[in-house]
Image 1 (tube, rainbow, N blue to C red):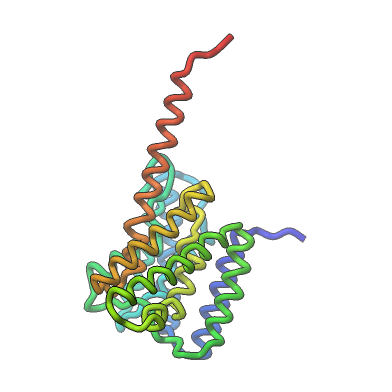
Image 2 (cartoon, helix red, strand yellow):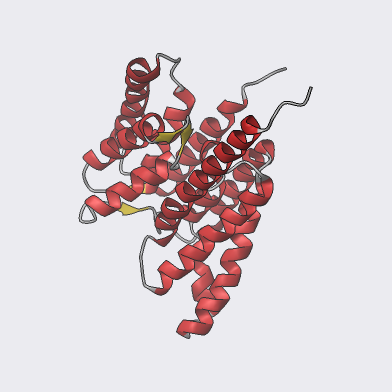
Length: 265
């Protein structure tokens, strides 16, 4: 039996979404889900038709829409629509030499948090203190990133977060457990499993992926010291594209040097 690996993430994220909402009523409502997912898919179709003529990536658009629904909290509907559209458009517009620069969902959330902090907040405590949803996310997340061969990224980030939590505790005087606590929340599970491991927006060599995960945790730690509330999103927003640009420039120089070398008969 064969299956399309691109369908694994959409199916499992949908299960997480359904279970969390039925258990805790954490979502804005089904109208927000329909709006975000519907607009994400429509935007994907329109963008591909206008920009490239390629077949639309429906699974990718669905993940963007459903992720915005999970991670964004707002009393009104328009942020879900805007976040979904920005996320999908970024994949076709914000590209260098054919590569994405920003993780689409992370970019959409950062734009919303920057432009409309009065109307938007990220997922925080909506799942309560129940351990069961976390176990569900850990299990599903592990299955997905193991299939993609990217578990080392998550492990590096988590280990780095713990080390920087100890350093922040020493600097601020806050209890170590208080500094570590955020990573046990539901938002972080989706962040470390589905966002920082995104194959389309991360560097290629394994050692570079490990380095970038460490740098994301380091920048987040600095932002937390300056009391930036949305530090993880902003850290990935800054580090991810910078790492991709460095890799693109280095690859271009390597290709130019290879082309300039004389051919030996």
